[in-house]
Length: 113
Image 1 (cartoon, one colour):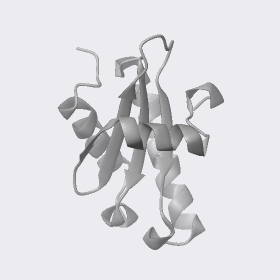
Image 2 (tube, helix red, strand yellow):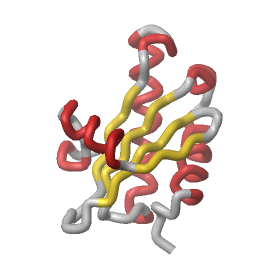
Image 3 (cartoon, one colour):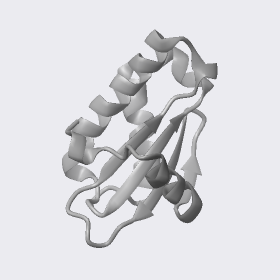
């Protein structure tokens, strides 16, 4: 995923948490905020230390970035999105990540029709 597609600043994360909307399933929590004049969506990932060691956390982030990369043409371009991984993600495979992420994005109508 390109750097332009990432939410990096703590300030931006806090803005999305405070002013955005949220939705969750068992594996992931999604926070999103509409930014009307934005050219493409941006994603921030959060995987807490309670989930596992650095190797596990980095694997989860890699899987999520790859799922976003594959879903990129379908995602609405005017949103900032933050994904928080929950405990069950520790044992998940890539296709389960993609399925869970697609479910969240469809439920919240963040995918193009």
